[in-house]
Image (cartoon, rainbow, N blue to C red; front, side, top):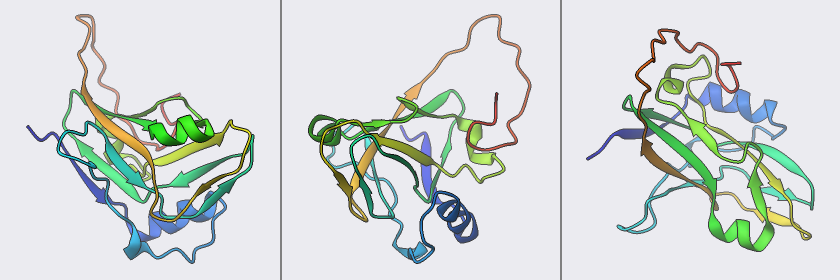
Length: 161
């Protein structure tokens, strides 16, 4: 059963978020890779970094993925560090687990998935361009009987608080 579709955000959106995250706009939009599963048995879709990042111990940054995801209602995409980066470098997501709701696709920022990472280890962490750095897993969620929420999302990252 297929419940989602990955696609690129617009070139303008990507370049705007790239600049806001402190990266040069010399990154080629055409080089952005869509998330993929490594094997037929993989639960997670690997996200590829469109930029090279060098994080010293204790440093963090936001990586604009260039990706958005159209997800059926009642499903959510959760992002986690790739296991190898967590074990070897203690790389963590700034928000622990990234939650991409189905209505995020229609947000003002085009649903651009921006991933905050931190190096909590004791050595430098190098994420090269096109390295797999996080993985996304789809989950079905359920609503409580008392649920009566009709609000709509308008903003992007962190917009519901």
